[in-house]
Image (cartoon, rainbow, N blue to C red; front, side, top):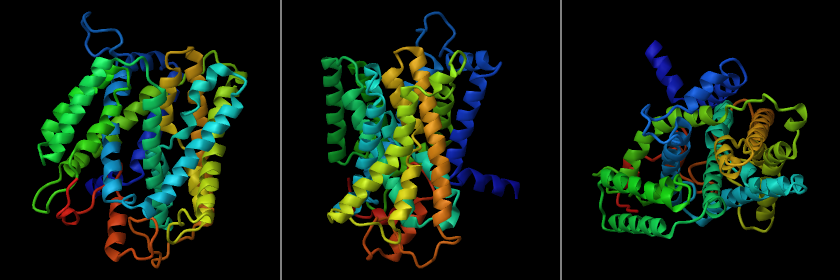
Length: 434
């Protein structure tokens, strides 16, 4: 019974969010108590103890430049799956969450820019409140159990996936140092080779991963943040195969999932959430930087999502997902203000090499805004959702369309049990290639 209970706890969809919260809380507590020295020793521990090891090669840099690339690889696999087989595989299905994600990125950036308009040195942080943390958002949503319509879960997941893709594009375009043409050319050559392998039906996963490691090194040297290599590799690994074979992307996704959920993301949270408030005056906690980020997450996210989707429905550019109303969208939009992982990642890129106090204040804004969004979103959803979700609500992997079949509904429910990589049963892949 103990083993079964432990297995259920580990496989519960909210476990990833709980681990992230515990890791972040542990980092904050250690950074502000007598354990501060121990925390600094841990995150700045060198990869090797000999003197030949570069001083910058620490646990913190390995997590932020190396291990987090594995998370982006999982995101790349997820994006490819949703585009080809999941909730985003048609224009009508992708339109509503795509427009919602756009609004959820534009409005927070605008609000942050307005709050910090009088401080030009803070302009680089405009994208910090534009991201949504998938693990935390889904973790909070699953606390409501069966009361949440499947279509609302799928909407939130699709929005967060598109949001991640937008954040990746923002990082590539706006948060890079001086580019190295030779390294970029080498990266382009590796990408070309992998694309030809995919086209030629090469299915050796180890070969893709080997070239992916080479691509990571090339992008690291090029001046573009190396984690983007993970997304590229995820998009180039073959997804679908005849039913008699095993999908390389599906196999890799299942292997990566426990490492990402139970190790990489909690480790990232622990390494980056250790905000020491020593020397930070109360006035600093209400600085324009912290307020701009918190306002962008708590106000900008729901405002942008609701306004953009309402306009899209009014203009008949998209339709509401089946079985839910705008009050559900508004409550879920508040939950999208949880911007922990990607927001901290962008904050490190924007201010990590700047004044040390600035990155602290940025993280204060991220943590405070994310906590407020999580609590408000949970309370709103708890207030508007019925005690038990009616079995008559139809919502499959698609986001609209009354024609969703029972099989699609089953696949949709099954896919929501795990994160970040979700694949349908193997028979559903028969005869398809990508």
